[in-house]
Length: 273
Ligand SMILES: Nc1ncnc2c1ncn2[C@@H]1O[C@H](COP(=O)(O)OP(=O)(O)O)[C@@H](O)[C@H]1O
Ligand SMILES: [Mg+2]
Image (cartoon, rainbow, N blue to C red):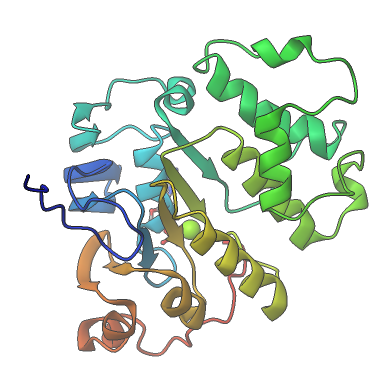
Protein backbone atom coordinates (compact mmCIF):
# COMPACT_ATOMS: atom_id res chain seq x y z
CA UNK A 1 0.00 0.00 0.00
CA UNK A 2 1.48 3.32 -1.00
CA UNK A 3 1.20 6.46 1.04
CA UNK A 4 0.51 9.69 -0.82
CA UNK A 5 3.41 12.07 -0.63
CA UNK A 6 2.35 15.38 0.86
CA UNK A 7 4.76 18.28 1.00
CA UNK A 8 4.56 19.90 4.39
CA UNK A 9 6.32 22.95 5.75
CA UNK A 10 7.63 23.26 9.28
CA UNK A 11 4.20 24.28 10.53
CA UNK A 12 2.95 20.87 9.46
CA UNK A 13 0.49 22.16 6.89
CA UNK A 14 0.26 21.10 3.30
CA UNK A 15 1.68 23.88 1.16
CA UNK A 16 -1.18 23.79 -1.30
CA UNK A 17 -4.08 26.14 -2.06
CA UNK A 18 -3.60 29.73 -0.94
CA UNK A 19 -5.94 31.15 1.70
CA UNK A 20 -5.73 34.53 0.05
CA UNK A 21 -4.68 35.60 -3.39
CA UNK A 22 -4.30 39.16 -4.68
CA UNK A 23 -4.13 39.74 -8.40
CA UNK A 24 -2.91 43.15 -9.53
CA UNK A 25 -4.68 44.92 -6.65
CA UNK A 26 -4.69 48.72 -6.73
CA UNK A 27 -6.22 51.34 -4.42
CA UNK A 28 -5.96 54.92 -5.63
CA UNK A 29 -7.19 57.98 -3.71
CA UNK A 30 -7.56 60.57 -6.46
CA UNK A 31 -4.02 60.98 -7.71
CA UNK A 32 -2.45 59.10 -4.79
CA UNK A 33 -1.57 55.55 -5.81
CA UNK A 34 -1.58 54.16 -2.25
CA UNK A 35 -1.53 50.57 -3.55
CA UNK A 36 -0.55 50.18 -7.16
CA UNK A 37 -0.63 46.70 -8.62
CA UNK A 38 0.09 44.08 -5.94
CA UNK A 39 -0.08 40.36 -6.64
CA UNK A 40 0.63 37.83 -3.92
CA UNK A 41 -0.50 34.54 -2.41
CA UNK A 42 -0.76 33.61 1.26
CA UNK A 43 -0.72 29.95 2.31
CA UNK A 44 -2.26 28.39 5.42
CA UNK A 45 -0.16 27.96 8.55
CA UNK A 46 2.33 30.66 7.64
CA UNK A 47 3.14 34.08 9.03
CA UNK A 48 3.70 36.80 6.45
CA UNK A 49 5.07 40.25 7.13
CA UNK A 50 4.75 43.56 5.30
CA UNK A 51 7.45 46.17 5.79
CA UNK A 52 7.88 49.53 4.15
CA UNK A 53 8.44 53.17 5.06
CA UNK A 54 5.58 55.35 6.30
CA UNK A 55 3.05 56.03 3.56
CA UNK A 56 4.16 53.08 1.44
CA UNK A 57 0.62 51.64 1.41
CA UNK A 58 0.71 48.91 4.07
CA UNK A 59 -2.45 49.97 5.92
CA UNK A 60 -4.26 50.66 2.65
CA UNK A 61 -3.42 47.16 1.47
CA UNK A 62 -4.91 45.71 4.69
CA UNK A 63 -7.98 47.96 4.24
CA UNK A 64 -8.37 46.66 0.68
CA UNK A 65 -8.10 43.03 1.79
CA UNK A 66 -10.70 43.57 4.53
CA UNK A 67 -12.97 45.45 2.10
CA UNK A 68 -12.93 48.64 4.16
CA UNK A 69 -11.54 50.37 1.11
CA UNK A 70 -12.78 49.66 -2.39
CA UNK A 71 -10.28 48.43 -4.95
CA UNK A 72 -9.50 50.65 -7.92
CA UNK A 73 -8.67 47.49 -9.82
CA UNK A 74 -7.61 43.90 -9.29
CA UNK A 75 -8.94 40.72 -7.80
CA UNK A 76 -9.19 39.38 -4.27
CA UNK A 77 -9.69 35.62 -3.84
CA UNK A 78 -10.36 33.91 -0.52
CA UNK A 79 -9.96 30.14 -0.80
CA UNK A 80 -10.15 30.64 -4.55
CA UNK A 81 -13.49 32.50 -4.35
CA UNK A 82 -13.71 36.15 -5.41
CA UNK A 83 -14.55 38.37 -2.43
CA UNK A 84 -14.21 41.85 -3.85
CA UNK A 85 -18.00 42.24 -3.71
CA UNK A 86 -18.41 40.75 -0.21
CA UNK A 87 -19.39 43.31 2.46
CA UNK A 88 -16.75 43.89 5.17
CA UNK A 89 -19.25 42.70 7.81
CA UNK A 90 -19.51 39.35 6.00
CA UNK A 91 -15.78 38.72 5.93
CA UNK A 92 -15.65 37.57 9.56
CA UNK A 93 -18.07 34.80 8.65
CA UNK A 94 -15.70 33.89 5.83
CA UNK A 95 -12.82 33.53 8.29
CA UNK A 96 -11.06 36.87 8.00
CA UNK A 97 -10.22 38.78 11.20
CA UNK A 98 -8.10 41.85 11.81
CA UNK A 99 -6.75 44.18 14.42
CA UNK A 100 -6.40 47.90 13.81
CA UNK A 101 -3.39 50.19 14.00
CA UNK A 102 -5.02 52.00 16.91
CA UNK A 103 -6.77 50.18 19.74
CA UNK A 104 -10.51 49.87 19.12
CA UNK A 105 -12.20 48.34 22.13
CA UNK A 106 -15.64 49.14 23.47
CA UNK A 107 -14.98 51.15 26.63
CA UNK A 108 -18.18 50.22 28.46
CA UNK A 109 -17.73 46.47 27.96
CA UNK A 110 -15.54 44.12 29.99
CA UNK A 111 -12.66 42.20 28.48
CA UNK A 112 -14.88 39.11 28.30
CA UNK A 113 -17.66 41.01 26.50
CA UNK A 114 -15.22 42.63 24.08
CA UNK A 115 -13.78 39.22 23.17
CA UNK A 116 -17.31 37.78 22.95
CA UNK A 117 -18.04 40.21 20.10
CA UNK A 118 -15.43 38.36 18.05
CA UNK A 119 -16.99 34.97 18.80
CA UNK A 120 -20.46 36.28 17.90
CA UNK A 121 -19.22 37.81 14.64
CA UNK A 122 -18.06 34.37 13.52
CA UNK A 123 -21.07 32.50 14.91
CA UNK A 124 -23.63 34.45 12.91
CA UNK A 125 -21.54 35.13 9.85
CA UNK A 126 -21.54 38.83 10.64
CA UNK A 127 -25.26 39.16 9.93
CA UNK A 128 -26.17 40.57 13.31
CA UNK A 129 -24.79 41.27 16.74
CA UNK A 130 -26.96 38.53 18.25
CA UNK A 131 -25.22 35.17 18.15
CA UNK A 132 -26.04 31.83 19.78
CA UNK A 133 -23.72 32.81 22.60
CA UNK A 134 -26.20 35.57 23.44
CA UNK A 135 -27.96 32.92 25.53
CA UNK A 136 -25.08 32.71 27.95
CA UNK A 137 -25.89 33.94 31.43
CA UNK A 138 -24.04 37.11 32.48
CA UNK A 139 -20.51 36.35 33.61
CA UNK A 140 -20.34 33.04 31.71
CA UNK A 141 -17.57 32.52 29.20
CA UNK A 142 -18.13 30.62 25.96
CA UNK A 143 -15.44 28.09 24.92
CA UNK A 144 -14.20 30.23 21.99
CA UNK A 145 -13.82 33.21 24.33
CA UNK A 146 -12.13 31.16 27.05
CA UNK A 147 -9.68 29.77 24.50
CA UNK A 148 -8.89 33.23 23.08
CA UNK A 149 -8.41 34.63 26.59
CA UNK A 150 -6.08 31.78 27.55
CA UNK A 151 -4.01 32.07 24.37
CA UNK A 152 -3.47 35.78 24.91
CA UNK A 153 -2.77 35.29 28.63
CA UNK A 154 -5.67 37.46 29.73
CA UNK A 155 -6.89 35.18 32.51
CA UNK A 156 -7.74 37.29 35.53
CA UNK A 157 -8.63 40.31 33.39
CA UNK A 158 -12.03 39.01 32.20
CA UNK A 159 -14.08 41.40 34.30
CA UNK A 160 -11.87 44.43 33.78
CA UNK A 161 -12.77 47.37 31.54
CA UNK A 162 -10.33 48.56 28.85
CA UNK A 163 -9.50 51.82 30.66
CA UNK A 164 -8.20 49.79 33.63
CA UNK A 165 -5.65 47.98 31.46
CA UNK A 166 -2.19 48.93 30.23
CA UNK A 167 -1.84 49.71 26.56
CA UNK A 168 -0.09 46.40 25.89
CA UNK A 169 -2.88 44.49 27.61
CA UNK A 170 -5.54 46.37 25.62
CA UNK A 171 -3.70 45.26 22.48
CA UNK A 172 -3.86 41.65 23.65
CA UNK A 173 -7.63 42.01 24.16
CA UNK A 174 -7.93 43.14 20.54
CA UNK A 175 -5.96 40.13 19.40
CA UNK A 176 -8.11 37.89 21.62
CA UNK A 177 -11.25 39.33 20.02
CA UNK A 178 -9.86 38.56 16.57
CA UNK A 179 -8.83 35.01 17.58
CA UNK A 180 -12.30 34.39 19.06
CA UNK A 181 -13.68 34.67 15.53
CA UNK A 182 -11.84 31.43 14.77
CA UNK A 183 -10.29 33.02 11.67
CA UNK A 184 -8.32 31.29 8.92
CA UNK A 185 -6.68 34.59 8.03
CA UNK A 186 -5.63 37.07 10.70
CA UNK A 187 -4.40 40.52 9.71
CA UNK A 188 -2.45 42.47 12.31
CA UNK A 189 -1.61 46.12 11.58
CA UNK A 190 1.19 47.17 13.95
CA UNK A 191 -0.08 45.10 16.89
CA UNK A 192 2.94 45.93 19.03
CA UNK A 193 2.95 49.71 18.58
CA UNK A 194 3.51 51.23 22.03
CA UNK A 195 4.68 47.95 23.57
CA UNK A 196 7.97 47.31 25.31
CA UNK A 197 10.45 44.63 24.22
CA UNK A 198 9.07 41.97 26.57
CA UNK A 199 5.48 42.55 25.46
CA UNK A 200 6.54 42.41 21.81
CA UNK A 201 8.34 39.11 22.36
CA UNK A 202 5.11 37.79 23.89
CA UNK A 203 3.08 38.80 20.83
CA UNK A 204 5.68 37.19 18.58
CA UNK A 205 5.50 33.94 20.57
CA UNK A 206 1.70 34.14 20.52
CA UNK A 207 1.67 34.46 16.73
CA UNK A 208 4.10 31.55 16.35
CA UNK A 209 1.90 29.40 18.58
CA UNK A 210 -1.16 30.19 16.46
CA UNK A 211 0.36 28.76 13.26
CA UNK A 212 -0.70 25.28 14.26
CA UNK A 213 -4.17 24.56 12.96
CA UNK A 214 -3.45 26.29 9.67
CA UNK A 215 -4.07 29.90 10.68
CA UNK A 216 -2.51 32.26 8.14
CA UNK A 217 -1.27 35.56 9.57
CA UNK A 218 -0.28 38.82 7.90
CA UNK A 219 1.66 41.22 10.09
CA UNK A 220 2.48 44.87 9.46
CA UNK A 221 5.30 45.90 11.76
CA UNK A 222 8.25 48.27 11.87
CA UNK A 223 10.39 46.37 14.35
CA UNK A 224 12.81 44.57 12.04
CA UNK A 225 14.00 42.13 14.66
CA UNK A 226 10.41 41.18 15.45
CA UNK A 227 9.78 40.58 11.74
CA UNK A 228 12.83 38.30 11.52
CA UNK A 229 11.82 36.44 14.70
CA UNK A 230 8.16 36.11 13.76
CA UNK A 231 7.63 35.84 10.02
CA UNK A 232 8.18 32.98 7.61
CA UNK A 233 8.09 35.31 4.62
CA UNK A 234 8.21 39.08 4.19
CA UNK A 235 6.94 41.47 1.51
CA UNK A 236 8.55 44.89 1.25
CA UNK A 237 6.50 47.80 -0.11
CA UNK A 238 7.39 51.25 -1.34
CA UNK A 239 5.08 53.74 -3.07
CA UNK A 240 2.28 51.19 -3.27
CA UNK A 241 4.36 48.49 -4.94
CA UNK A 242 6.21 45.36 -3.88
CA UNK A 243 9.94 45.98 -4.12
CA UNK A 244 11.21 42.75 -2.53
CA UNK A 245 9.95 39.52 -0.97
CA UNK A 246 11.37 36.38 0.58
CA UNK A 247 13.01 35.24 3.81
CA UNK A 248 12.83 38.10 6.36
CA UNK A 249 16.57 38.35 7.04
CA UNK A 250 17.27 38.58 3.31
CA UNK A 251 14.52 41.09 2.52
CA UNK A 252 15.70 43.57 5.16
CA UNK A 253 19.18 43.46 3.59
CA UNK A 254 17.87 43.86 0.04
CA UNK A 255 19.40 46.95 -1.61
CA UNK A 256 16.00 48.15 -2.87
CA UNK A 257 14.62 47.94 0.66
CA UNK A 258 17.65 49.68 2.13
CA UNK A 259 17.21 52.45 -0.43
CA UNK A 260 13.49 52.85 0.32
CA UNK A 261 14.41 53.47 3.94
CA UNK A 262 17.34 55.72 3.04
CA UNK A 263 17.51 58.67 5.35
CA UNK A 264 14.96 57.04 7.63
CA UNK A 265 15.86 55.07 10.68
CA UNK A 266 14.37 51.58 11.03
CA UNK A 267 11.94 52.38 13.78
CA UNK A 268 11.89 50.39 16.95
CA UNK A 269 8.13 50.80 17.00
CA UNK A 270 5.52 52.78 15.15
CA UNK A 271 4.50 56.28 16.00
CA UNK A 272 0.86 55.57 15.28
CA UNK A 273 0.60 57.25 11.88
N1 LIG B 1 -8.36 57.64 2.92
C1 LIG B 1 -7.32 58.16 2.26
N2 LIG B 1 -7.48 59.23 1.43
C2 LIG B 1 -6.44 59.76 0.76
N3 LIG B 1 -5.17 59.30 0.85
C3 LIG B 1 -4.95 58.25 1.67
C4 LIG B 1 -5.99 57.63 2.41
N4 LIG B 1 -5.47 56.61 3.14
C5 LIG B 1 -4.15 56.59 2.86
N5 LIG B 1 -3.83 57.58 1.98
C6 LIG B 1 -2.51 57.85 1.41
O1 LIG B 1 -2.05 56.63 0.85
C7 LIG B 1 -0.67 56.46 1.07
C8 LIG B 1 -0.42 55.16 1.83
O2 LIG B 1 -0.89 55.28 3.17
P1 LIG B 1 -0.91 54.08 4.19
O3 LIG B 1 -1.53 52.91 3.53
O4 LIG B 1 -1.53 54.56 5.44
O5 LIG B 1 0.64 53.82 4.41
P2 LIG B 1 1.41 52.98 5.56
O6 LIG B 1 0.42 52.20 6.32
O7 LIG B 1 2.40 52.16 4.80
O8 LIG B 1 2.10 54.02 6.40
C9 LIG B 1 -0.19 57.70 1.81
O9 LIG B 1 0.29 58.63 0.86
C10 LIG B 1 -1.46 58.21 2.46
O10 LIG B 1 -1.40 59.59 2.67
MG1 LIG C 1 -0.03 52.16 8.39
